[in-house]
Image (cartoon, rainbow, N blue to C red):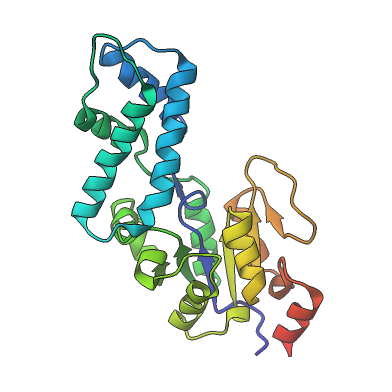
Length: 252
């Protein structure tokens, strides 16, 4: 089916619409939290421990299904962090206190370009949704940030049972708006999960590279969400990051 506009524009969530605070960064916040707890360690050790915690969280958060699961994960994260710090001298860090500090360090915020981008897509009469690898908490997170009532549908991996770049989660998103994969656009910040995933199933994709990173050949790139939204609504949206054959097939 050919159309001048997509049936829906989906945004990835974390890293695209929402993120943890930039100032202070989680690394600065946790370094200060450890100092406030009475422990003096080199910044290299503190940052390495937080990197380890972030890797652990990324590997396990998609399995969270209940509030109890999430609480256990936060405590396990803090335990990983404390263990990675190693010897802290006479002061022993409390895992529950570190879990509370990390919750504050990674308090989610809406990225400032999210609001105008969402409004631009909605003003064009196009549905705006979320397509994300995230735990069951995503709808609650978005609601708490004031985004939930602007986004429909909210498609996330914990509910679907498949993560990007798996084709199934892309199909679920398209089905939720009653459209074909080629009739939707995804905007995301991950080259593997978002760009490669979209390409492999024929969904047009815009890659967000706020840090100025160079794009691989053939990848439609924007430096902010407002530009990405304009690309998703402009003529030629069907071929964003796709091959000529894919784009031609979508217009057939």
